[in-house]
Image (cartoon, rainbow, N blue to C red; front, side, top):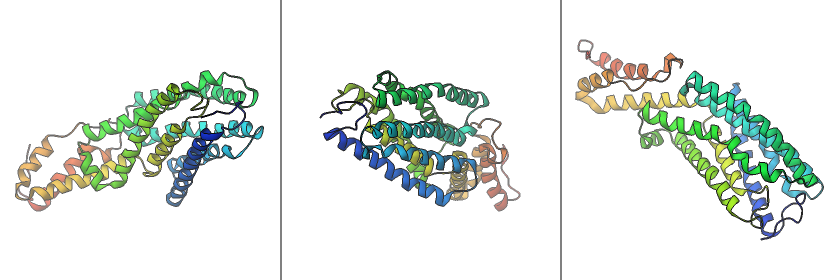
Length: 308
């Protein structure tokens, strides 16, 4: 495969096909997700941030139609929107998972995300100079992008899976059966994380003839799955998990039947680990568990409430 003769011209031959396919895939997916978001959007800051995140990224999937010298200028300008979209995505996932984090963890999350912004200012400058003035600082800054965009995403993905297993004690198979939407979101997160890790490794090991400098088709697919995880579930994760947990406990009560007395005693006495105390008390897991089990027992056997 051959690359562009100079950076401010678009790729040619096979590289052009790969880049055009990647941009078309990204733009089409983002437009569909934006339409779904707007159709279901409520007047909350979270929904508005998701819509802004999607809108800002669309432009960076259209520069393939242009030629020099407009190509380099348009690519650099739309890259600003993409960088902002990266940061907004990290804010969105923090809002969705903040109830699972302690106050110091949230402070570190937001603080480190803020400290990463000077790098993005440098990256925007390097990108512009590379594609318009042939200054090659971009060759040094470009490989560092995953270090300044992905750690927060990897952290929140890990926190969510850990919380499902340890705090809610929910089986993933049950979770997917009861809420296919939640299953799609988890799959999107896993695919995004996998491509985030494998993409740069493949590109770095390949020659510039295969992937010209600045060209990485894998990040587009990873980014689409990131946005899909934001869009498929517009609310925060805790509300959805609380709803699934309530259904799970109700299912257990009904399944036990005559042995409800012993089961209620066991579940009421052996509570799972609580989430941080600053979380909403109305949806605390311990409260949900005690309520869902003991209320059903009390209603059916008012004089035989199990005692711990």
